[in-house]
Length: 221
Image (cartoon, rainbow, N blue to C red; front, side):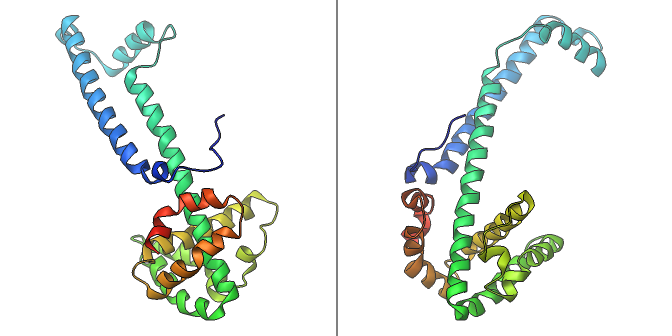
């Protein structure tokens, strides 16, 4: 299984969306071409001269086309590429948000006044979710941190269980999503990102990789 390099090319990270858009356009073009080609072939062999049920067609297709191994079509290969690329993009997006969430936790832990200033906006943003139920669940997930910057569910290393690690990561991602959504509109957050984010990243491991992941945020700071 391929692994990501120790450092990421910032242009590659920030170009993910453009790359996906281009791949989507190519998939749409190939799908349209293949559908038109399939219709011409069906016309040619007389398919439309008869009435077929879905079951009959599925049985015929299985007997003729699936009886022996066949090479994946161009369309299938493109769709597989897109799925793999999108999964990679989602993973990077989650890492970005988790890192930013950790940044918020660190700032609030060491500066209680910052916690007091940011919490009302965090709570309001969480509750602004288009689904009130989801918004309420997100507030509940962060309730410990909203009440106390020393909340053990974020400050302490996660317990050695998948559930605890998953919950901690979910909380960090929520906070990171808030940073991305509000970093330009909230003056105090904008100041923190400008003054402290680069220093925070330099204290951890994989500094260059994390700076590349957050290049757009650092550049706007």
